Every structure is written in C-alpha cells, then in structure tokens.
Image (cartoon, rainbow, N blue to C red; front, top):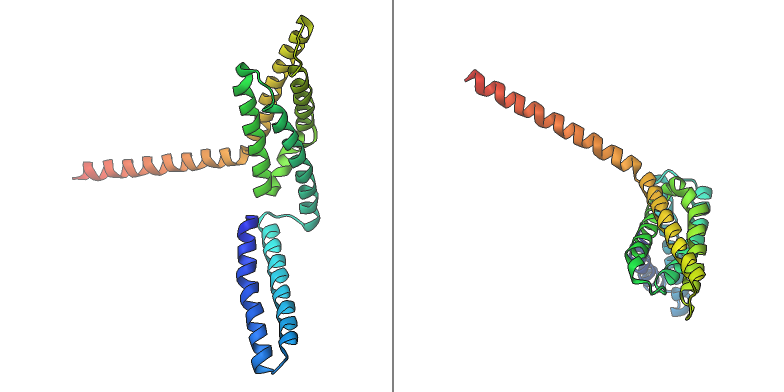
Length: 216
C-alpha cells in the first residue's frame, strides 16, 4: 500500500480510538483528566501500530513474501535509492545537448525499474542484475563523465574519451531497458494470452452470427 494512504488509514482508526478511550475513561469510569489522557494515548498507540502490523502482513501475503525476504528487498532498495540520486545528479549536470535524449531515457528507465520494485517487491528478484551490477556501472561511469565534461579546456584525447563514454552509456541504457523488459515479461505474456482469448471469442461470435444468418 502507498505509504501516505497507509498513514491515512492508520490515522483514521487510531484517532477515533484515542478519543473513544478518553471519553469512556473520563465519563464512564470517572478517571482523572491525566489518567484518561494516558489511557487514550496508549489505546491510540495500540490501534495505530496494530493497524500498521495488519497492513504490512496483508501486503506481504499479497506479494507472497516472508518478512525476511521483504527486509532484504527493502534494504537493497534503500541503497539503490541513494545510487539513483547520484545518477540523476550526474545526468543533469552534463551540458552536452546531443546526448540529452539518451540521458532522459536512462533516467526514465531506471526510475521505472525502481518504482516497479517498490510497488511490487517480488519483481525485485527479476531485476537483481540491474541492482547488483548494471546500476553500479552506470552510476560510476556517469559520475566520471560528468566530471570530465565539466573541465573548461578539452584536448583531443579528452574528447575521444568523452565520446567513448557516451557510446558505452548508450549500450548500458539498452542493457537496462532489457532489465526492465525482463521485469515485465509475465505481464507481456499475460497480455498476449488475453489478446488470443479475445480474438478467439470474437471469432466464435462472428462464426455464430454467420451461421444464424445462413439459417434464415
């Protein structure tokens, strides 16, 4: 569940619980204001964290993950988020206009992989090569490229190095696009299956309509 939506749900349950406990303690059980407030805070806390545990367990069950697996994925996604921040900073400090589209594409595809892994953590396993190899390579290469391209004076050797780096970055972008495609393979297969089913149903409907027309 989206973290903001989860917070709204937890608040929606814990706030009324807090108010109810306070009112019951103060009026029904004739407790002091301070004691009623204490009971209310405890009750609200139990409701908040209890709801949080239920939401998390439901999330894990939905995505067929154990708590240990989710912690492993979450830990790696936190590391990836830092690397992506470094990557994006480097990508958009470069002033080479002809390579702008390539850099935008790289930003788009890496962001898509991360968002998919975040919303559907089981997909993380389909993108392990991205997280443990390709992301590190592209971050390191982009940072070096950004540093070299920012130098005020460039000789022919530096220009050749920059050109070669752009070429390798383009290849890495294609590789990362393949990582994304691998994450989406099941969805693409499902889509093809649904298309085949729809075509078959449509054909059967047309054949049935044709037979009915001939009978008349």
